[in-house]
Amino acid sequence: MTATPLPINPLMFRQAMGRFATGIAVATTLDHRGHPLGITINSLTSVSLSPPLILFCIDREATAFPAFADAECFAINILAADQQPLSVQFALPLDAEIVPDRWDAVSWRQWATGAPILEGCLSTLECRRHALYDGGDHIILVGEVIQVGLAATDESPLLYFQGGYRDLS
Image 1 (cartoon, rainbow, N blue to C red):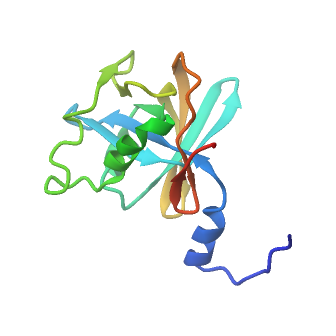
Image 2 (cartoon, rainbow, N blue to C red):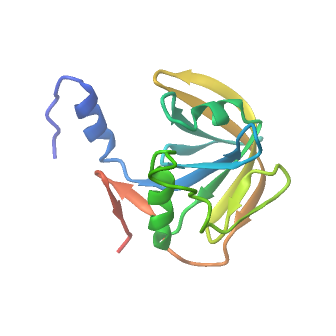
């Protein structure tokens, strides 16, 4: 299979990157008032084993951007295949008319940093901010993982490919 080269534009770039299957996670933190805040992400990758570093990217236009840009701590909650509704819920705009309180029906707790830890996830990474980098219309948020939670399950992950949710079957 040979790809045909095409001129770059935002739509073509998005389509090309949509052919890279990714896992889905919810990044969580506390806002300046101490209220929980979460966003669905798929731009997650490990950076280093020593120290343990991860990164994710957030759009500068996202409503949650200021809270994550200022956060000293955050958590990454890696979703299981049956948590698609949670992914959709945290992907919706932070608009009280659309989602009155997205946290009402969400089970969560706090660990050392206070960042919200969602229940039922495949794994959770509790992080302290390590660095923040310019990434064009996004910022790149690097976190040092200070605690990890692993579910005692062999459940499949929630995946995203070509604009839709997928499973491993």
